[in-house]
Length: 181
Image (cartoon, rainbow, N blue to C red; front, side, top):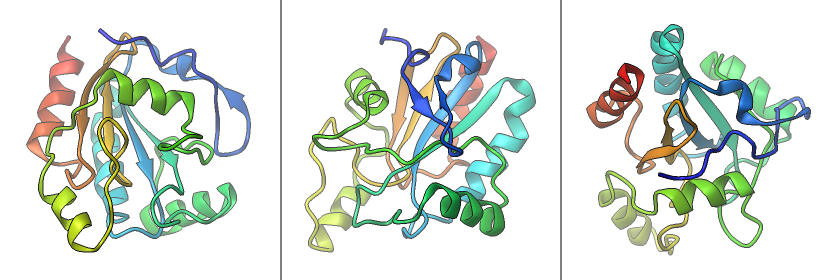
């Protein structure tokens, strides 16, 4: 099993220092998000999933990142406003971080090292290549909206490709299995 994510320092979207310790005992879906991406409409499905399962001990945690074609250029205040107005996001958002490259945040170092392979690898990679982009090699995050499932003990147990939507049976079944434990 992987190391716990609970004690890694992060900042809230309001800029307050914190950790994920407050989520101990809950099942988490950590997602690197962006406001100006073709996958941005996934906010809607993530919010729906969060609303349906939060009373069962489930949380979606959004981590804005500007690593991919600068698709998250805004300030934390702009990101929060965008998410609230356009997608009525109520799940927790955190301060913008780097999820890939030399300046990768320690949280994402832990996540990518814990599970280097993603479920759903395939078409999205080919699409990026077709657009003339060079996708990050494994275990790096491929693109915006990659999802990491964390169990109640703070261990990374699954990783999903960016184009796998929140209502996909592979994600929902994995979440339900962790909630049942």
